[in-house]
Length: 625
Image 1 (tube, rainbow, N blue to C red):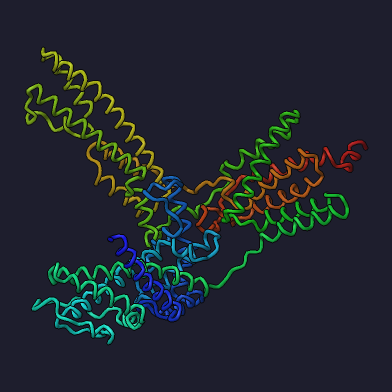
Image 2: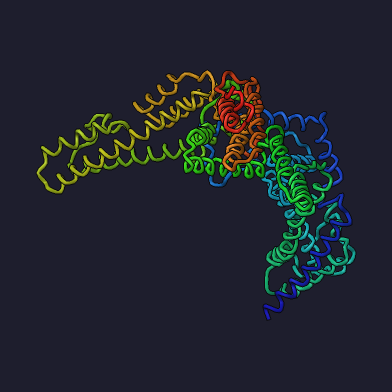
């Protein structure tokens, strides 16, 4: 019986679901009081270069976001030390986009606009699934959904109270429901809860026949059971029934909102993938007619050399995966092949190429923290990730430190109590965080004073474990000194002051002095060293050298194409302005190079000269002459 009633109610609520979905499609400009047309106009205006919000977002994304992520990675590594893995959308929350927004329409437009940037920075297509997964959009919608549900719930409660006989005034009551009014609550004094919010949307919903029919059945069914419960419980239970039928419907609006914004977003075509189709077509056509692969292979290698050197998207996950795999396979194959064939010159060039990828090659001052970074919206995010996140390196070490010190002092107090020593007669230095040696010394002194075997064992155990605790804390402090030196070496004066404040608030005594000295004695680096793979042109050169080595191993004459390409790209690494890759989902940034070691140019010249001597007939003839 209960199962049948459940499915009957589910069937009734399905009418409401279908009706709301219909309303959304018929009235797209009005979604539960939200003017979609206005929100979409605001959203489209953000794509104009003259838009203040557009300028605000793009300036921080292009300049502050890369610096923030570089400094975070430099200080504590690329692995996210948080309960959930952060993504680009989480980084953009630091912009606090809702500040200054004066309406729900403006807040919605800003949330979707930043989800657009999230897709753009990750080289993903801008679709409704991406919008729905955006943390900023979800934050807006969840807050808005709560208000919508609450507004409709309050209206439903007042409506139920009115129809059950309460003497209240509602701004809108459908005529079809007024006839259901009957006094089933007697002289119960009801206090209205609905204050008129989202009235336009509620009126629109309440005018729909299917909605009225469903609500009528809910009211009639509730009225029948009025005798089984008090007036207040009857009204609240009816509200709950209507609430459950609307909550899922409002949540379903998210799809429709996301879809409509995706439809009006300017499309950006990425046609780079078409070259693979062209390659395949050209290859099969040429092979079909001429039974030869040399010409199409030559064209493909030449085209890819140009793409890698000039157009490769260092931010693209697909490009990174494809060319990362190509470089790795090419280098590994070349090294093992040349070693097996005892071509040691080429083997050492292959090995050197693999090592050069990770060698510091460039120096720049532009990635040191500027004094103005304290004004960046990402500044507090950096402080949080470095010092405050519960799973951060510093917090984990601080937790281990506190646990060990507290355990030490607690065990010392237990030992003193068991030995009958009055702790008030001991100097405070025995209870200081850094007083491990004092505590060990005192415990050893007890061994010559006590005869009780249990107490002797307890004192010996304390000395043993206290020594271990002392070593552990010393190691933690040494690691923290190393951490704070690394932080201070690239920090602004303001960030150094934050480090000092953190140490002073978390540590005491000698350990505090050690950490403060580690910060104050650390000089700011004159520049930051960057490995080869961080610079666009040097990474492109390494990929081309790897490809050339692979083709040389296969004894293909086409090797001269990536050889020439690697030399040309390596020459470009000599320019003072270079593009630095930070991480996926974050823009690359142009920096001024203070000095560099042109490893890739040296490798390209050595490999090119060696290959020409071994394969170029003209050079061989000159040698004979």
